[in-house]
Image (cartoon, rainbow, N blue to C red; front, side):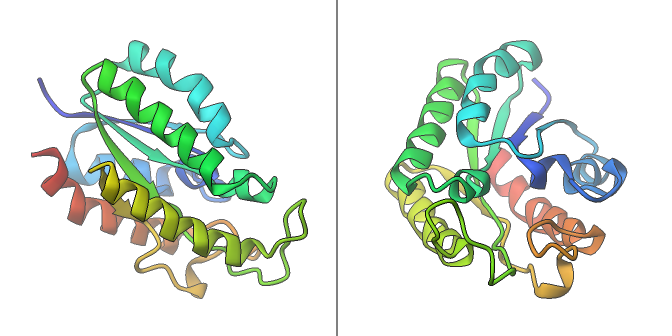
Length: 184
């Protein structure tokens, strides 16, 4: 069966703020010449992603599921354990449908003055969540792609949250380097 990847996520996956043909999912599909479905929705939480996951798996019948989310959950003040439980549930849906699961580590937020509903620094919360998510993936033996690795302040839109075209190129580069090791 040829490789087919379902990318389930939020605005980072959907490519908020840039043309869809400049987003990392589209760029990756063009570079690797494999079927990649962009199931990103701006503003989505891992709860919304979980709610869509099973029907998307049935509809698209991918070989791989790439999950990238959690930033909006943090903006709403949700705890890491809750976010991880949603990611865990999505990975179990994938396993049920014999789909390999890959977890994406979200990028940081560079807007230091952004606070969530609980008045917590979003920047600090995301850094902590990245660490917790990486540890969860190690313990559960999940493949991981860390999207934050080469992202710098010049890769962000003015809001300090979303990535510009050069940021999406960097995200695509990280995935195109690591993905062949994961899907083979």
